[in-house]
Length: 502
Image (cartoon, rainbow, N blue to C red; front, top):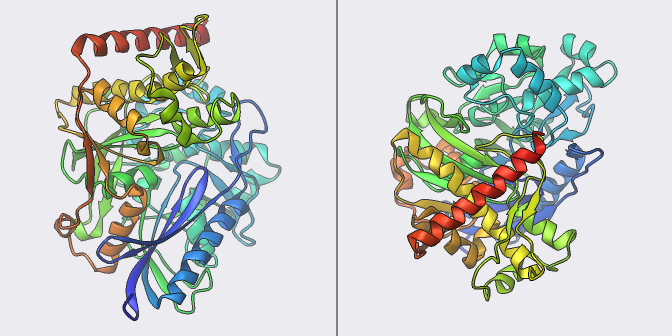
């Protein structure tokens, strides 16, 4: 290492863990620290986290990589942040103390309220303004639940004493010692409160959800100056100049800057994002329209994306490990399923927290279909992996309605270390699948945004010089086998939907 090498700190706050990474200005990772934190399930369909445990996991990860920076004479030039989206935190502005647990994006407690809103005919308005559907997934109904349920919360909110934030906002509030109550346009676009045409909070929606505007953070573009911080023991002040929600950050990290470029991230859930350009597209049933990114460095423009949200991907492997104890660690699953000639007729629909795109059925329950006396643990494990590919294909089928045909699927996330899964993805989607050279593409997206915001990069074209493409898996499954597998998957989905809608 040369003396005083310049680098960028990226905070990647995910659903199950928080990472801190140091990158060189050439986009290469230098150091990484990761800390898991717990998730709580106090009732059926409820999913919560402790805000202080989220913060502690971030703080400990940052302390470790900053210690590495000190030992190697690295200078932190700027900070980028990416985060789990939609997860909702409400806190007291005076004390900074949350008034309730963080309600995680997977939480379904507001399902009945969402159904009421649909019955009242509000979905068309919400869809037109936000690009989203009425679903417990998004932040607005979670905020309303907190205000309606916690003693004195609504009165405090009406007096302007409470603040709301997704996780990015909460982290930046703490990093600035309460001086900055900010978010970026991608996280804002996931709340059901932001008009994606204007990139601003929408007063009509605030009235519908009875949420005071005083609770909301200021919306900024993704490569803005968000705050200055001396958190994590920094001896000098560093600015945060890049921020985006994790899935948009991953698309940015995969350099999906042109219409039709598409990425899919396989972590706790699976999120598939396709760039559709600078105009809000016509809505497609089952898909979400969202802000892909907004850049000061690109003439203050907003770029839009279509997104398919799959709630359960990596959670299926966790279930195999923790509940069924079929495997003792995730890396065992590839060796378990590889010797199988086929799936033995077993299909698994991983609706642990309902079904997301394209079905949007909050009441769906997970199901194993096709079990016989000869079914063994390897068949069940394979069915869990296959479900990830089938769900991906469901969404790609909807993308084709745009008449924009992607040429390849760029993938990232922890599950893509499984070569069997990636090859099955290529086979089922009938499309080349390209694995990112650097798997932490959410962090890469935050890095690139921070570098744009700081001026180390001047425009998107500068990023094209950074190479991040890795292994390519080409499809090799015959047409008839693929069609039959997809038909069987469709039958499994139908059985789950029929059961939950009885």
